[in-house]
Length: 246
Image 1 (cartoon, rainbow, N blue to C red):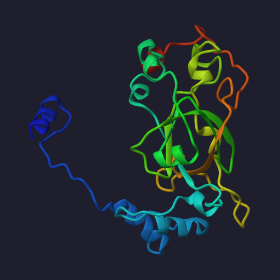
Image 2: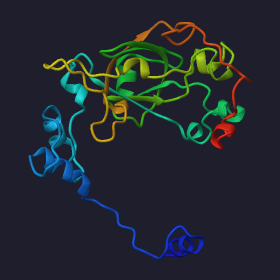
Image 3: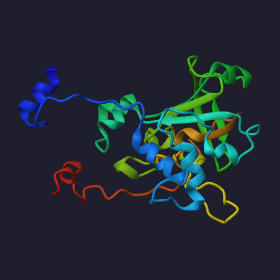
């Protein structure tokens, strides 16, 4: 109530009003009902089944879409990635202090995989999906689900980008899972290729990835190693100028 009264006082709202949190999301049900054939606005027939299956008005679970297109026995491990808060709150600034916190990122492994593969501190792993392969440093995290690995997103940078030196840790030890994730799903029977994304939000399927992992000889830096790109440092507006529309 204190927030509501403050918000009215400064003009965010006209009057104090209840905040409704929807457990049952009516707009989702409208899409689903249309996929079932109700109403004048109908989805394309080739999307009808997916809309009906996924756009439930209540929280549901269904297997990642990629699971239908790969051999789950060959790729038994779920790989996740998420951006650290330091990157969210300083995107584009390359704050020197924050770089000390998140200048590199290991791939975190659960105890089960760590022991099965006989990993030790300082080891590297080759991680392979149906789309590609990366070679990266690993670290043990005992709190993980036994079949899940993860790392920070947005730490790894291509050499020369962001005004960084080509030997910066972000370019030699930092990495991304992007190389393992295809933008498109395999071709369907009609020749169409759907985006490898969440069917509700369109967000890239970061959490749908399956991989296999093997211990490997440490390279001099993360793989794949891509050619350096030179950033046009000092030739464009600053991030602040972009924000204010200069």
